Amino acid sequence: MSLIPFTPVTTIRWQPPPRYEPYRKRQEPTWLDALHTWRDRTGSTITWAEELRRDENNKVMHIMTPVLTCVSYERPEASIQMHLRRAAGSPIDAFEESKSAVESNLGRHGKALVAFYSEIQNGGKGPHCRYNTFNISYSYRLDNWPVEECRGEGSKKAEAKQKAAKLLLEKGTYCVSQWDAVSGLKHADRIAKCQSAAIIQ
Image (cartoon, rainbow, N blue to C red; front, side, top):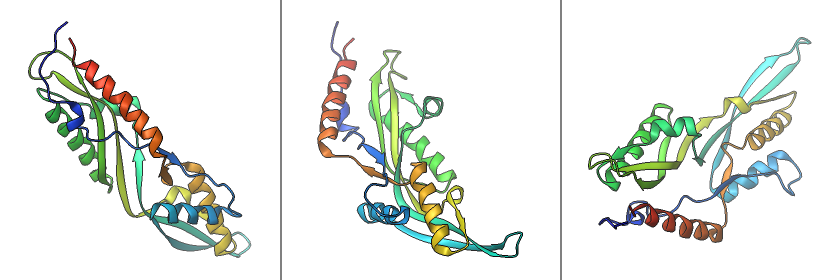
């Protein structure tokens, strides 16, 4: 085995991805209280879009849709990762090309990239496609994003909001928060060792 000269990947991927997890209702008395706890902890904002309709008994029903401004996090499943991975002659080029692909994909859906994370491996397949990105994840920002799949309905606004808050928190996609720093440091150490080993042929 021989070592090849390289620029450490840690200079490209300057930090490991933070550990995110969905916020779960804990000691809060209601689902709406839990949603407000998540909002306050993450610095997010929540507004509500209201619609009215009449049921079969001509009773007015309120439909409340949560509208979020927040930062969320995604680690795409394998089938999507395949379309985001890139190979290039240098680690930085592979990294930037994957980042550009993610940024473009998010932009088409009205989302803005905040931070991009990827590991780099040395595939040893020639000078033009030697370095490959894998294990891609990213955080992105939503601005005034109506979460239409989590709208709540009730005879009163408060009831409709409670139902929407429950759907939103149980979905686990938007209401996320970062985990503790200790776990992140352990993860960073593991990744650094993995990346260093990948340069050995």
